Length: 170
Image 1 (tube, helix red, strand yellow):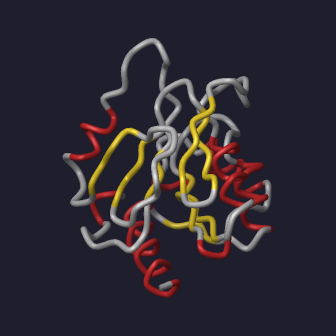
Image 2: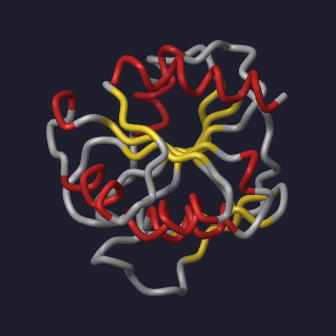
Image 3: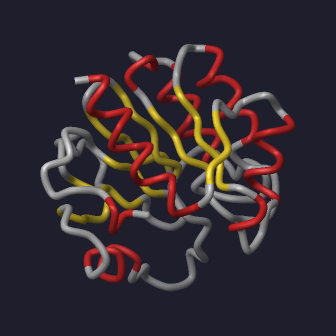
């Protein structure tokens, strides 16, 4: 999906995966090979910059606080994971959520369902990957059942939908 986003994207992108805290994450390096956007591991206090992908580190909740990122290693696990998609999405709902688009991709469990519903109620847009294109439909399916999804799309349709949202929001 990141590969379909243009280098000049007028938005910051936050990526959160449930990774083991036992090993350093190679995800920023891997993602940087797949996109024209700048990719970096999120750090506490990072200012959100358009055209940059921020990757949540293992074992820290990622929150948006105004125009900055906050890493939280104090709050416990949510749905057996840290970082939690619910924590991130709820922090987005607390800010100018009408300018946010969230994407729930293939994954197991229910993390992200409650946060997606909170974000949608706050005026944000939430896209979910379709069951037909998901390897694991647990997370997208849970977000849909929770009423938090604006639109369900095939994986190859999500990137263009994000680009369209950003263009309309500009």
